[in-house]
Image 1: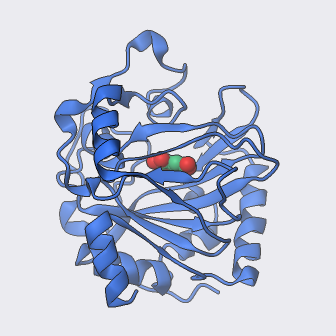
Image 2: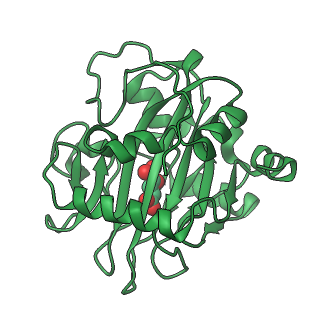
Length: 266
Ligand SMILES: O=C(O)CCC(=O)C(=O)O
């Protein structure tokens, strides 16, 4: 990441590094994603229709390739630089937003979930999103509100009434279409009118780095194009999780705090 990219990340809370992965490397990642999509695993989440796959949580627990990918210098090096120290993987998932069927993600910041559910002390984490497909205006790009990474939102968050939650395990309602916590429209309107919104579009192999406190959402894919992407969330080892009464499973919030070391992957 060049110094102008670093400056942008600090200012807006995100940055897209173009062509970090080659077409050939993306093909390998896509092939492994397809293998996992057709294999049963505990961390899978379906869309509201009960059929279409929404996310694979913890792909690194079932794939050597995805486990190693987190240690690739292109990701790990940037995560260490942006966060300023040794890191481990807090959360790892593949969101498989599928043509016509892939549904939205409501407005949220990841840090609320990581603080409330997992006991993360400070917002000193980030996510690298590796685009496996082209992301355009039609297939549900992530929408980001620049500059919200420093907002203290925790008092603005409301628990969704129990009756509106999707059924399922406690960990699943933290990642379903109707999220467990939400912001009021009044707050969102004020914030977005003030700061604007950016759609994170790009090509396969581009990587979006975004701060764990950044306000974001995405709409459904109303198009014949999938929008699959790998999400690797790194946390500073010095910011590792406190104990909580009901820890989420390892595939949602890892408690392996050993610092990662760089590895050659491809
Ligand atoms: O995949 C998306 O569009 C959004 C995912 C997201 O917001 C999240 O996983 O926190």
